[in-house]
Length: 291
Image 1 (cartoon, rainbow, N blue to C red):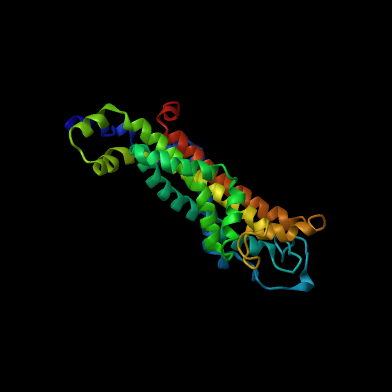
Image 2: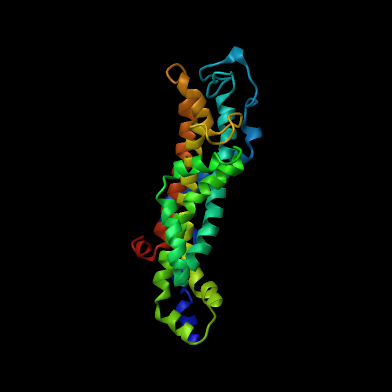
């Protein structure tokens, strides 16, 4: 058992250093800072908003961007800037919730499928069936079974995202399962739970973290698509998908009603993807050697 411990002990040069990662891979810093600014903007939306995002003002409908209306107003006279800032709350809540819950569920199922062969054949066929259905269609089908709301939207997005995490974790576990130190530990009578927690789980964290960033970005895009189609959060809730959906009719005369929230959505997804790419380059040993 001492040999196993020595083999698994990370050398000082292999330990992840945030400062070193940022210095060698600026995309981590750029994506992380950009995402942090968006989170601060969403959390303190009441401080940044210049108008009440819910207040109707027909007299000021479709006003172009100006000193008073920074991003213009929509067809109901609501301030697009304030509604866009409040819309960041919905997208970030959905993205982070989907990423965290999908990662936890996918990690548990992936560990079980990769380590226990009896469970693998059953669970993976279910995962393959879920992945065969387009995410948007599966989410819409789940939403129609319950009352529309933020909670059901998150659940509807989690269901098609979990199989993707399961496949990543399972692939890592299968590659570790056949290693000599795992086989020797099993022969030595080490319990399965101890093997999973001590030797297998730590090796799955790096790819899991990277995959969770992509799940977060995918969750925000799916939420915006569902809201645009009218199947997401209620219309009275300011979300980027709802703002774009309500402004599409007036795009030719008031393009800011679509371009502004669309730009914020694109920037947020870009920040998450840059962070994920940077972490992948840093945490993957094959790519890390080249940096």
